[in-house]
Image (cartoon, rainbow, N blue to C red; front, side, top):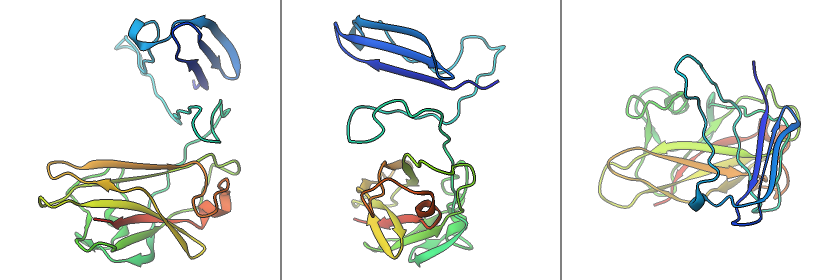
Length: 214
């Protein structure tokens, strides 16, 4: 059985508040209390103490009051994952074997089993993505996820790239490490190509990839 759980709280030493909703109904609320972590009155724990129970979590999101959108409860939402299905407009990087896009479509990532690589600043790969199948309206945000590491001691960085309608946008630079893979995430609550809310048609036309930036 699945439940839609929403938890909203304010951290404050005297004016803290907590509100818990299950399937849209408020089941617990408290105001004007100390919710600072230093007093350990309130912690969020995902899981259960009994080994006889199995608890699953899906479509998890976190919001805060920063920015101009997604600052409160979003009502029931779905997180839909889109993995590369083909080559996009640009293919500069070198695959370990086969097609570039087929080296980055593994869930979970398989690190050195197959990968794409490069050493030239500005070189990039873009990938075609499938259309949305579950989300039909009100796209709240797009999260781009990549894994990477460097193979020598020089500074190396990558940026996520989004392309739609012939226009591209580069994300912030993520520096790589030599010893292990680094997980990189970019969350765009608004379409950086239009500065407006995402639409389903924009997602369906989107290509995503990464660029060597350092």
